[in-house]
Length: 142
Image (cartoon, rainbow, N blue to C red; front, side, top):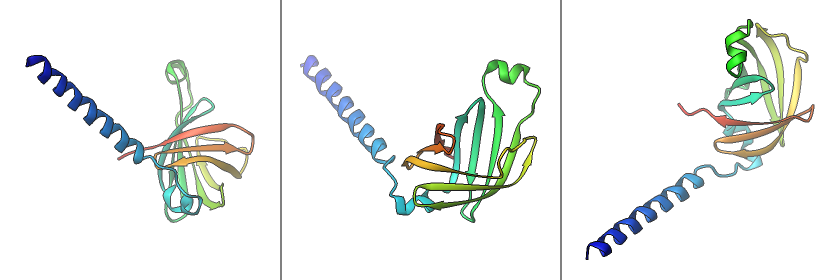
């Protein structure tokens, strides 16, 4: 009798875990291309080169991006403080275009750039830059 109760309890825990996994997977569904411009609004975090990048895309078409060195040695011995850039963004099809209007503690090579949206889910965004580098960003939950 005790063994049957144990197995029943274990089966219930497994079922609850399975349902929880299905529910969480469902919440990170693929975003339709026609919804990119509205669903991309928010704050995203990723690592680009040797920098941790926190990018906020606002509904009014502006963005700001904070850049910080990554890794133990970079953050311990690096003299450069965090930097930031800001500007405007637009989306056409699967291309996101960024137009930089200003920066702080950063030297921007190009004032405008575009990236291709390779994969876009509710909480994950993969972009391929014009230079061919692919970066995955995770949505920052508040």
